[in-house]
Length: 308
Ligand SMILES: Nc1ncnc2c1ncn2[C@@H]1O[C@H](COP(=O)(O)OP(=O)(O)OP(=O)(O)O)[C@@H](O)[C@H]1O
Ligand SMILES: [Mg+2]
Figure 1 (spheres, protein in one colour):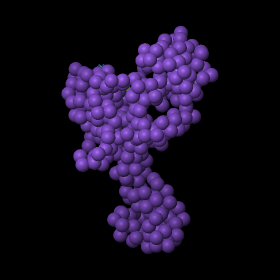
Figure 2: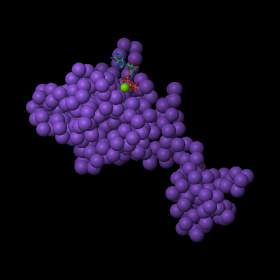
Figure 3: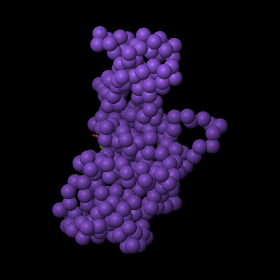
């Protein structure tokens, strides 16, 4: 995603080119250009109202761009021959018939696109909803509804999953389950695009992030790049602080001293500081990352008025 070069033959599963959407006075999506490679999990992040759902709806042919265009597997969504078998999507506010069981809901979806009932049982088991599958959806918890939504997206055994805020309403155990599930899904070369307004919810799941604010792209990078970009502050204690400070400065790292005999290294990682110390045989007594956490970076990038 980040190293996009025309000379490389990278196949992009999703491509968006200057995509914009205006609703009256609101420019919900503003000139978004990005591309997503196969086999990756991409977090699509932004605060409430940033334009995430609108973008996903345009990718899936559910909203018409005001300008720009997007492709999925190289074609505009509505020109794909069998989209239901290639792309599984769960958008916000997915409606279920409340009086129907989860299983019947999936069966009726499956029938519409020629998917056999056996696959319904398979996806119920994939999302671990078998035991509740014959209960009416109206009795489902929010987490169970999220799983049912995911099951419906998996029916066609797709190569791309597009999930709009799937972690909403999940308890920590549910979030962990979703993370493991998506990692497993992507490990075979399949692709996931997952939105959230909470970075922490998906930080351990995603390989890379697209961050939008007021409809505009403010960051497109791997999580590591994002951390490095703002730079953490690493606090280090050592009996040889003077030597360590000099070694770090030679690496181009800015250091400051505190009065409790610790050294602060700016814009680096504790791994880097540790490696530098090890290479010179300098003992480390404490090594902690402080300051800008990923969440702070996210808030910084998406704060009122922030833009690139
Ligand atoms: N159908 C619509 N008609 C008018 N305005 C809309 C419509 N859909 C979205 N908007 C506006 O577009 C902007 C982006 O909304 P969108 O739902 O895409 O944001 P989001 O990032 O998904 O937010 P959230 O985190 O709350 O789900 C908002 O200002 C919203 O009010
Ligand atoms: Mg939304």
